[in-house]
Length: 332
Image (cartoon, rainbow, N blue to C red):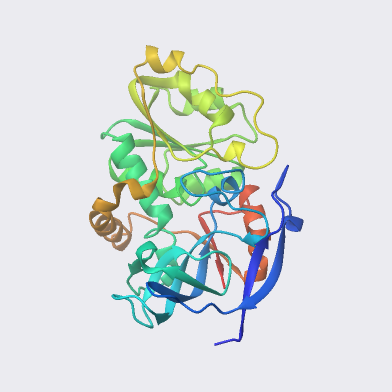
């Protein structure tokens, strides 16, 4: 074990777009776990658009404050345990923050199995896969033959949403940025169509890609994309609200999506926000399904792995700019 604990601190909250200067590397002593705590060695840090939202204020978790270790979920190995049920060598998922070592209360940790590759515990079997699974199936409730549209479709969650919708017999349209990503969605992941929001008007392109309207919209971005989808929703359609990345980084949109609440009323839409932990009681069943689909080749897993704790800030900045394809993480 090294004698120091490298940490990435959020030294100032960004007022515009997130920049490297908002972070700094620091060193601290390796913490000693208290009663009920576990000392963890961080292996892989999950990077998610939500990391940026945490800097703006409280969400489903407390806000990340200036001059503190940047928050973030990770796969980590138990080094020392002062809590029953955890032993050195166990693998866990928890909010360790961006650092080499963390002392975390055991009640906030989830034990995970040792699998190969271990990185799948952050992608298809982690927050991304479980968010896609529950957000689509429990909230969106797609039926075979329906049309499912997903935004940020080439990202960690969206890429799984589309593949699960295809497994369920739906027509799937992805919205992504750039021709390369859109081609990948169709040729590699099996989407029926893809709309490139960077090169064509989304409303018009979406109408061509989904001529029978939208039954389920899985929303990762909010803003103008949400607004383009809303009038194309079919009656009694379902909108699964997962994130609003269009409002996370930089200047917020000038206005919220128009058509709210009017179109929601007229079309009798169900609009529901969620986080994957809402469905923790169904986690085992979800994992069994995901594992079976991966084994059968029905879900392809794309991972974007960045090496080095020191590269974590730039990796998040790049994710917010749409650099990644699939799940982005940092190997510590």
